[in-house]
Image (cartoon, rainbow, N blue to C red; front, side, top):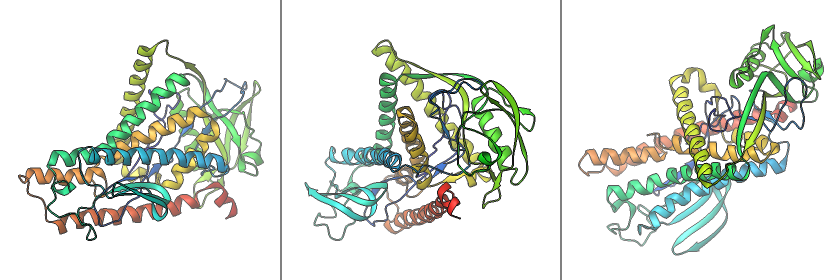
Length: 439
């Protein structure tokens, strides 16, 4: 399923950037199943800010921006493990939603799997096979409806396919509902234990990190510098625009000089940097970027205020996720190249994990809502595709489409998404910083 992972403005306030787009992985069993697919991510910018101070007074910078300079998230095995753990937890929550919705209605369930591919570990309980598989990029709940090895009669009223439309809608929708609830709980936990992030913006863009042997390092940029202008164009206070403005200029200037006005320890001066050329022809200088903002944490005074903060942040974040997804589809010809896969998701998550706990809260909440929204799209192999087939059945007065037609629709969707997922995995791997360095 697709997922739109990117900073969102009003909800997590220092993630004040409009996102673009995200991920998936699928289950190809012939048995009915509902899957959590995590293959597509937009890599425009994922901004996390611990704390920065205006013009040169930069302390304890733990900030990141993945601004089309490539992914550096695999430099720390621990951070990668944390990112994978977050993704796995979201998968388990999604599949548990499907499972519980079926189990509590007395519907037969045959499998509960986390991951895809070869089975690493499994056990059986109450006629259900629980398994952990090699690739933690999704999961599925399997039903014995069309399993030739099942000893359950085909007309058993507790097979999913024989249940009324409403029962099936509940089972199919439960994964999405579970992700939405999980996102709300994560935001509530962040507000209670960490506080509500409130930011104050300053002009310019902060450079929290410069990669060794990069164009930026070679030409004199240092960690902690604040970029005030690019090619004599002043940078605004607006958080999303300032970072993307610098990124766009760099990408369009491979092997061409870019003039940065920089503030370093209270002094302004110019540094000329010549971006290196990526394989795709775009420019890169090897830095992380972050908005020049100061972030404070406001903790709620009581339970009522905690729920008030959570509700405001939750609905603001949901609006941004839906709006960014809409913009992605409306401008797909321009945004198609921004779509990335599970490698990119884990890379972004690893970078966030290297920052601090705030980032993991936000990463998990955004990822949950993206998965929920995109999984509702009426596309084959997504929960929304299964719901669309049930809608067709309802319109036809309860008469199902022929089994061969349904299987053909779902199989074609699975094949398409698997092909796209494989392409994105290869492309995103080649875009990793350490892979580029080897090349």
